[in-house]
Image: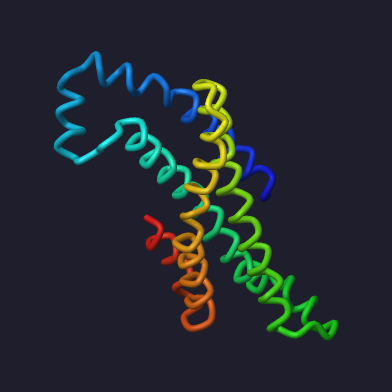
Length: 171
């Protein structure tokens, strides 16, 4: 599942990164768009575009994060957790293991999106410095995504019937 999410977000990142160069040309050809960006306070329209593009990628990645964090609840309600916990595995270790998968998967999915955007933009502009810049910018959304995982785990522990409300927090 993680590989599928990472591949999907990577493809979206490549698509968004490949049009970054054309953003400047588009703005120069449409004065109204340039005026709107001036009003919004965007110093560099390409940076403003990538700020929005990376936010979109982060929201998609946060979907993985919430789903992954809620997987623990799904395992419990399906009865799969009971079989594991009967083997002597503590509930704490089981939960920590699931959350570790959520953490590492979120890093991978966010990183794949930033890597895709950075790679495509670096190829389009010939500026290799775009790759680490956009990769690190995408990873800057990691704390926010992990807050959503925390909400999902908190609801799972305190109000299991409300775990689906975790999706509302993402929305």
